[in-house]
Image (cartoon, rainbow, N blue to C red; front, side, top):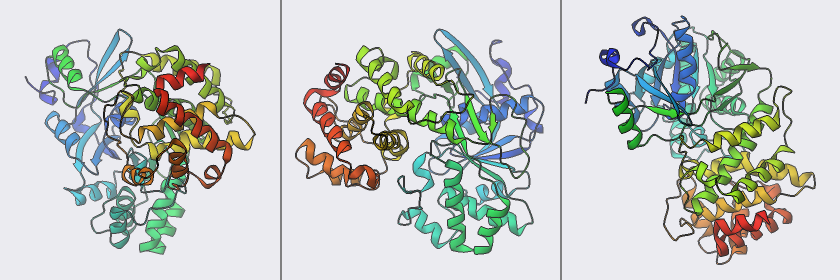
Length: 488
């Protein structure tokens, strides 16, 4: 079977939407670090929209900091891939052409530095997951003893981390008399722009104080909030698309109709016309907080409870009335901690979220969402718990979600089947819990784990009591039993 590529575009069925621009005339004004499925279904689509609108400055040079897998998928296809938008029985196929090149940084560090330092580059976006920033999830400080970051602190000749690449490239731009690029974190980190800026400035200052001052004065790190559900692509998805297109596409992505990108209106250079798909604002934090605590917080609760119950997909978890009631209760609790912008109707947002979760064609896997929980819990669940306790309010639903995460660390679901705890702190968390014999012991151990649990919660007896209650139920009655008890 032939692969999707520039040479085979004309063979596609007539109902597939193709790029309307000449890809050979495109200039790459964007470098994206972290070329995964989410970027291909989100930011790349926005830049592809700009190209389709006639502004050919916004092609993308993408980079992976680790695996060559995406490069190997996309390179034989000339960077082209299919985005499938699924909504119930309806499905739309669109070919995205914005990605012009994919670099594997460990293989070609100088190529990535050259792209970042190019005069054509105006925007750098990042989707490297929370752990890619090398920041302590509780404090936001650089994790100095991380081996890759330690290497970048010693030398930036061949960077190993995203902050390292940004600092090294900004040094090259300064030396060449170029302005900095606008660096946009697109990961679910609270205050992601501030955190990225602080990471870059701290690393720069360790090497060159004048460089750090130049970045602080002339650079831009806007806050941003991104939202689109992008489940992992399966071999079955690729096979089905091959049947439909008559061509093989190893880089395809599948997603939902909904897309949202809120960006702080703070750039230090050119930007595309963001008239479609992007909302520019002076304050991203209220949008970000609502998304983290409603969508992402509920997703985490669904992932761990569903995963423990050996339920594979989000929509299957929500087919259970007790799970649906739990999500609504979690939203009731989290909503009281929000300061939503005037444009956000929280009741309508909740209804839309439930409809998105219910979309059966996405087949969003609970185990995919369960990854990297130690990096996600502080902003998704622990922050609203702290806010409610400070206000003297209950935390039953939020605490159940945290207890389910803690139960997940055992590496075994309620049926006794083993699962991998895919998390950068999996080993130290396992060591922390190794000698705990009872639910109470496990709660005491995790509360002392300050890489995840903030001090205010670690010493709060209300949190300890709620967490112990739900962990005991989860361990004795399983996730479904705990959900049934919660509902009643």
